[in-house]
Amino acid sequence: MRTVLREDHEAFRVQVRRFVEREIAPHHLEWEDAGRVPLSLWQAAGQAGLLCTTLPDPYGGGGDFGHAAVIIEELARVNATGVGFSLHSEVVAPYLNAYGSDWQKQRWLLAMVQGQTVGAIAMTEPDVGSDLKAIRTRAERDGEHYVLTGQKTYISNGLNAGLVIVVAKTDPEMGAKGISLLVVEDGMPGFERGRALRKIGLRGQDTAELFFDQVRVPVSHLLGEENQGFRYLMHQLAQERLVIAVRAAASIEAFLERTIAWTRERKVFGQSVFDYQNTRFKLAEAKAKSVMLRTFVDDCLARHLRGELDAERAAMAKLNASEMQNQLLDELLQMHGGTGFMADGGIGSAWVDARVARIYGGSNEIMKEIVARGL
Ligand SMILES: Cc1cc2nc3c(=O)[nH]c(=O)nc-3n(C[C@H](O)[C@H](O)[C@H](O)COP(=O)(O)OP(=O)(O)OC[C@H]3O[C@@H](n4cnc5c(N)ncnc54)[C@H](O)[C@@H]3O)c2cc1C
Image 1 (spheres, rainbow, N blue to C red):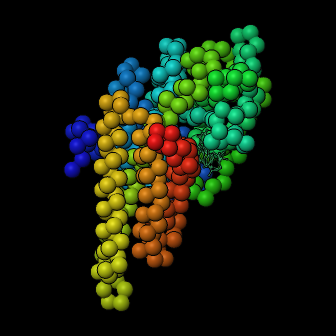
Image 2 (tube, protein in one colour):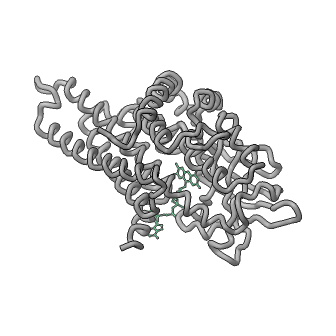
């Protein structure tokens, strides 16, 4: 029994599951072939109250991170990895809410809650990922504008995004202390998107390159204070890491359940696959690890709900959850035989999609650095 989620969270789960089963699961393979999810899904999700649930009134649903966790878990249950709601709601919107002016919140948050505008955040560049302070994208002040020039890559929601929080250097001499966050809107002259990047997994997710060629961004689009961007990023990244951990824990549970059912049904040499001791032992190990992970992730969730989740613990959660997800999904796939290798939205797709969890949101080597600093 989980204790971290309240009755209102579980009631919300019923509503979310219904939406996912009706609006998402039947179409996901189609979206994987198209390389993106249609904007109409975002609008439907907005209408159903599934976007930016953690934002306070009057912008959002006035919920908390428990509601966000329910959405992440329900999407993970059917491996709907093309749907970038959590990045939009739990990563991008919180920056606007935490550091945005009233004018900025009015302009962007309402549209994000309704699914009229999709959000993205652009940190990574072709030559810089982990070492964020080394970015080259430059924003030079020119009167009431910043002139933004640079290139970003691997940007989730990159094609669908109506707004992008761009991480840029406003004072290149100052390293991490010279970084700012600017909001670039769709249609600004000089802002171009590349093709949808072809990936081994997350095939329904529109991951893209973004180009900024002397984009004139009004000073009113600066988020928070100039040169404080790195500090803001470090503060918000804990929640992004918790999102990855919550997704991994739910993915393991869902596919463990499905594997138990499948192995019970599948007969080889006159008995079900489940009846072989090897299968039961592997499933037992997976169950034991999954329960242990759930206990830790829920503890992180509880701490986060109390505003007490620190960067180190969030890094531990992301590290453990993503490593365990990769290891266990691989073993569960093996029990499926050839069926496991099919790209039909089942265990095979979940296994491929899980690989990136060890890379993005800060790679697992960076998570170890964060944990090691506190030793
Ligand atoms: C599908 C996908 C979606 C993404 N979405 C976004 C997005 O929306 N926005 C965004 O800004 N970025 C996004 N990213 C980028 C992602 O965050 C980076 O890929 C990640 O941070 C790693 O950076 P990198 O690829 O440049 O690898 P590098 O930094 O070049 O690292 C290469 C290798 O070196 C290791 N390494 C680096 N530093 C150290 C160290 N100090 N000690 C030991 N090993 C180290 C890394 O762990 C890695 O194994 C996405 C990436 C993918 C694949």
